[in-house]
Image 1: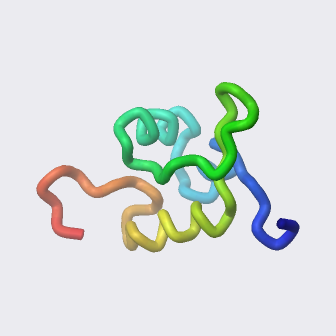
Image 2 (image 1 turned 90 degrees about the vertical axis):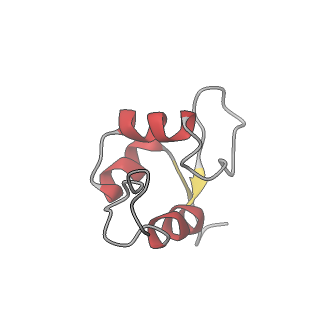
Length: 72
């Protein structure tokens, strides 16, 4: 799908303003959506649309999930 490319941790982190290691931690904690592609071990990728939907679900958080107990 050329208009909905797959992106990995590095590009997601750059767009979200966080470190790639932060996103890896989010994934371990179940705070990221499931990857759209896991065909390469240890290199999950998400469609840009999946990433954008995840970001829209966290307005004002810059990609960071809200702290527990914080209203969303």
